[in-house]
Length: 183
Image (cartoon, rainbow, N blue to C red; front, side):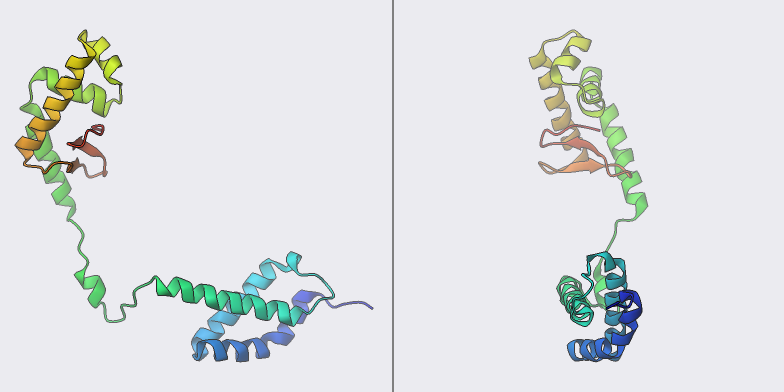
């Protein structure tokens, strides 16, 4: 017995898929979208269908699974038809980052040369304390002390709270009081 191509046979099940989708969604437009999604998934995964088995049941399973996946996804989303939620969200203006960066540069230039050098080497350039100490011809402890003093002084000059970072427009931390790198 020869079987029709399952892709051709799929069309036969659209009316019953729509009825099932309407029962699940209770909305005609959502049901039509669900059927379309299910057909696209079935078509894309036709190689997983075993010829000779119940194609309609296979498609109903895809539709049902798609529906429940959509429900799980929508539970995590906030419906905001009138835009009230979006209006409450705020984004810092780009000029704020530029102003913060300018404040950083001003504060950075107030540091002693050896502390600026230590921050650039350890923070911005990513060298280890040992490597930076070797380049500056000083002890590792001295390098650690310079970096720590520089971070503390920057925080003081910029009036930052402990652990607060200075962020550039690219989102890169420039100074961290928590001991992370300056970049």
